[in-house]
Image (cartoon, rainbow, N blue to C red; front, top):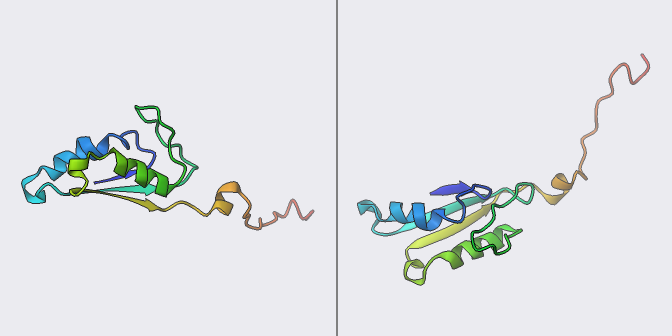
Length: 107
């Protein structure tokens, strides 16, 4: 199962959705929850326990793993893949040179 890190079901999906998939006869109780981390540009939904939300892909993976009950830790895998843009791109420090129009050139 996969989600984006800003999906409103981010926190509930591992147990509510993945648990259902893992219960399927062909899965033998195993499941993988893959989350794509798009960076701090997109807000992480709040948790029902009101704990602070993570600011990195690694912190998100740790929090999601810690939410899995001990009896399911060996059956449900959590993977957070960091696909965020480089920080310089997010903060706007990298700018492409803009073409000047004929009006700007005074032509």
